[in-house]
Length: 355
Image (cartoon, rainbow, N blue to C red; front, top):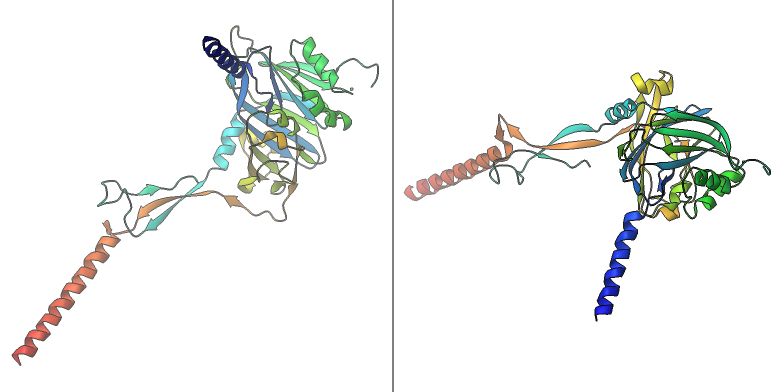
């Protein structure tokens, strides 16, 4: 019995330790790899994509949690890319532009928070690299804040494994195989070392946004590496283009949802993405309950019509007349009418009897 209890305790301990050191290798558009046995997870990823038919710009921001002092992040891109720090103000502006519209909708009969059921009033609706070449060809490398950014080329997936191992990181199982389709298409890579310059600081909270730009004649958002994720993933995209955009297919996830669509005139930091020109903004949300089913990258296309859409949140308000609930006035009127009818009927009967 003691041996069985000891074995059970050891098994439980091993399970708990395994859960503590298990890193999250994938995020929405790339692979996030912590150093050694550290742990890092991407809680939320928000991206803004600007496409003008020739050039694609992606501004992305991560909210991460974990104890990793350093990590590497890899994103495949279809062409030669430039990388710089992004402006976090674009996300605030987009959040404001796509905010829901609030409307009031009256109702007649009292609800739980209305008199006489309670003293409250009203209710709020729920919102709703070729042979002989070095392991990795480094196109460029620069330090951007806490990011050490390398732009790479490779002719085989192992090139990235060599680069990572040389820099102190271990490529997770399966990632080299997932990179092969990009190698076959001669894509390039943006490899970022996230290493805070402040001693003792770990990668946690909201990281500085990065802006990646490359030439492309089609709007593509890399998603294949998210197949490696062990937990459900979610994707949030703001797309600025000439028309309303939609994913060509769900690529193994739930049906994408349009949460906003409409013409906007960007200002401030957001105007740098469009050159100050008006654009059609489409906000897209998508869930991936089983990341292993992701079978490709998102390709976005223009919809048949630029139909605007904005989410509406209704605030329920009890219908009143002069500050008095309409149902109460109606009830009083009905009771008064019944009383008057009863009185009239009584008088007629009395007169009839007298006659």
